[in-house]
Length: 331
Image (cartoon, rainbow, N blue to C red; front, side):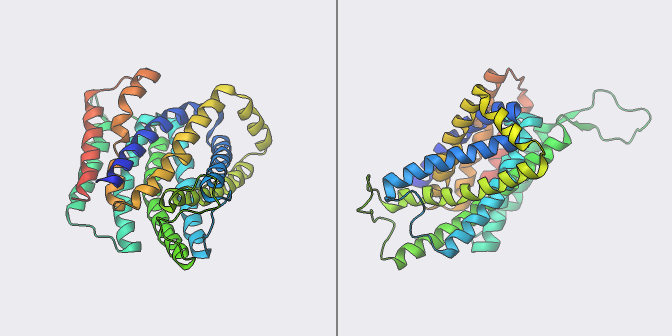
């Protein structure tokens, strides 16, 4: 039936839209105010959703182990990963930022093997090399003229700021690691449901819109992660900015930025992340990450149209090669 694979493709589309909204918002208000506002919006949407489908506006039946693993996932995937991603958008834009998110697949494969015993075949080494080659093709350009004072200097140079590359690469690594932590948290959530006499196909009778728990639990898990994200981003905002309150006040007064934050929230933490957790319940972490990684290809055309970016054939080929390399991890 390919349920997990279909959901994963939808997630890739959702994250494409998220990236476009987030690039505009991050450049207008900065990454930390953006993420604080985004987490508040996300928690509000998730609370309403859980109240409708689970009868209470918070994650029901989640035990201590579930909270621990999902909070850890929130630290890695949201606080560190999303901060780095939004910073990357500021320096290199959403198109290149999403290209580096292909690093999440090898990270998910490696951490899935180390933490939860998922299989990683030898072809993964080849896939890693191809993925890195694709990224390299997109971010490197050949020097037009050699430097006579340094004849042994590299023939290629970076087209992007090093700081942007660092932030985007860290975002990709943290997303892959965070997804594995989330999957572990969901396994503990399933155990907590079983201890309460429920299974994934049960529906809660006191919910306004009773739905099977396999649909509602990913939203509950996302709420735990988002709660950690809000705490972490708020602490970072006040730690790094003496005028944190003024920054937040300025951010919420920017109507265009706020609409973009709302769009990034709906398609990101609310729909995209929740659906990504649901996808891992129906397919392996690696296959899900492979399909999530299509975003760098899907984003090329809208980024070129909306932001008037010049896209070279080399960059398109690099994105395709990078995604193709990701797929080899899980053949």
